[in-house]
Image (cartoon, rainbow, N blue to C red; front, top):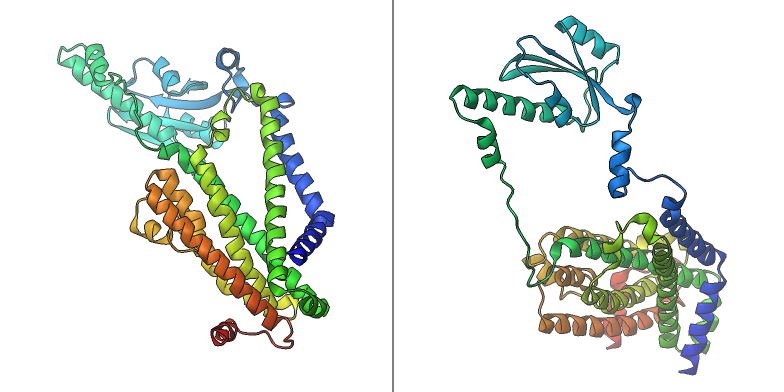
Length: 416
């Protein structure tokens, strides 16, 4: 046990003395703090809810801020041109006398677009260049449809305003959630899954590279002969886990503190972002840490199979492919946490660290299923640690060409 703590202390020292570790933590934290402090220094009224102040600003908009349109309505289909501004807020409309004038305004870019109304159910939409997200045509469709219905209904001697009021009756509804709020949990689950993905991806490869570097400079020969390999690999992996948790903790703490200080400037727009349900946090803590340890043991063993850092990519390639596939399954599974694929994956150690978060977020898991999945992951993590230590011990003293994973697995089988 003394050897384990010696290794743990040494590896933690390596992490905390690395300039890259310290600088990256500080930079990310500063970026988040500065980003959350922006409303205090920059006018962000266009994206932040500011109530009455926002309404006053809209009324005070000058002509240059308005969108210019042109319309040619030869038969006066739209009797009240004021309706145009109702459907197109913050706009200025120029009524032209012929089609040529309309085209000329568009060509000279004096207006953003023009509308040539031919009859109550047909018009030409004139633009210089089309845009991917151009909604003007759809808005004008709605306007012309309303005008057509109004004229038809009125011609039948019926009060259009009464009919319109009936068709546009607002229905009041209240959502009573008896289980989980999957809509809000979707965002929380996405964030937590992504954090696990980045932690395993970054620190798993760092562990593999560290072991390969020790092997390449022969330092590992001294370590293996003087220290139990179980203590070595467990010390390295757990040190990486502590370092990653501390780094993420520092970054998240800076985010929480910065938002608390600047919450008034944000007008509460990000409040829900920091209201992650306790059950999701607990799932992230249990499955996230266990998943990190599980993959880290595997990365450590794979790092010992090669003697050069440039060969690491080929060694960890298969596990990386599995990991990325699991990540994609989890992200797409957020829309259907009760699917058979997500249920099956939540019991597979390679996938459960992410897919169990999906199931908890969508309320598609029972307490018994949660416990069973956690126990499977715990046992698998311990076995991965023991197996990884054996591969580590056998592979670290073998140099030359990269050792194939299937040969390493044969060694494990023969040792049994």
